[in-house]
Every structure is written in C-alpha cells, then in structure tokens.
Image 1: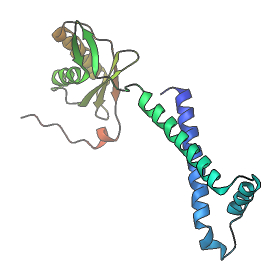
Image 2: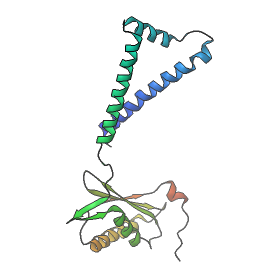
Image 3: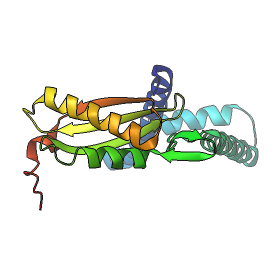
Image 4: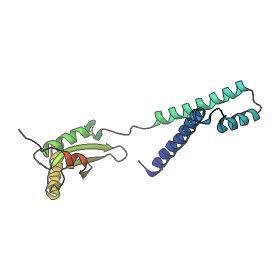
Length: 184
C-alpha cells in the first residue's frame, strides 16, 4: 500500500468515524438531555428552514446526494484491479502459480527443524514473488539461509527457469509457541 492510498484510507475512516460519532450523539441526546432539544438538530433545522426550499424538494435533494455517494462507492469498488495475482510467471501460455512454488520450497525445506512454515505471495505490479519462511526463535539463521538458498536453487531447477523472488525470514508469536515438529 502506498503512502498516498494509506492517507486516503485513513482520511475516509476518520470522516466515517466523525459521522458515526455525530449520529450516535444525536441518537443518545434524548437519554441525557431530560427533554431539552438537541442543539445540533435545532441548528440543522434552522439551516434547512432558512433555505426556503419545500420539504419534499429537500427530501429529493437528500436522496440524490445519497444516490450519488452510492454510485461513486460502486465505481471505486468495481474499478479496482485485482490485488493478488496468483501467477508468478506466464511462460508461453503456461502460468506458474505461487502455491506451486510455495509447495516446492516447503518440500525442499521439510527436513529443516527450524523452519515452521513457508508461504508465497505474488505482487501484481512487479510480478515478484515474496516467499516468507517462518523460523523458530533462536534458530541458526546462517544454516536456515543456506538451506533456503539451496531450496530456491532446487525449485528453479525443477521449474526450469529462475523466478524473480524475495525471501523473508520471519519469527513472531507463532514461532514462539510452536510445538516441536515430528517426522514419522
């Protein structure tokens, strides 16, 4: 997510939160005001009465504004591209799925006790595969790195081409609470 889209998303969330807070305050006003009218509603009623527009026309204007908001929201949702593309590479009409690559790497790293999980995600814009290898706490990272490099080379050999990928070694809560791997 780029900083610009993150800013837009957070701005939209902020505006929605302020609107929800205003609606909540307006709805809860009678519970706490002991019969007094809401200043927010009174101010809004004065502004609406001051326009000189008939109430039926005001309702149609409000409905039109809401319809416009719905149409804009639908356009935004329906025109967004696919965020996750599963095909890492499309060679001569044959698409290689990121799940295949993850399975091949998982199979190559099955005998490494410090590796808990392997996942892969394809980035759409760059056609780059990010492989996440989750390791145990206090794992021998040098050994894991060498084994992962060997697994990547083995996967490239099995597929017959070098894939554009980035490998990320991660830890975290799952790594800390994971049970010892048992091999039958």
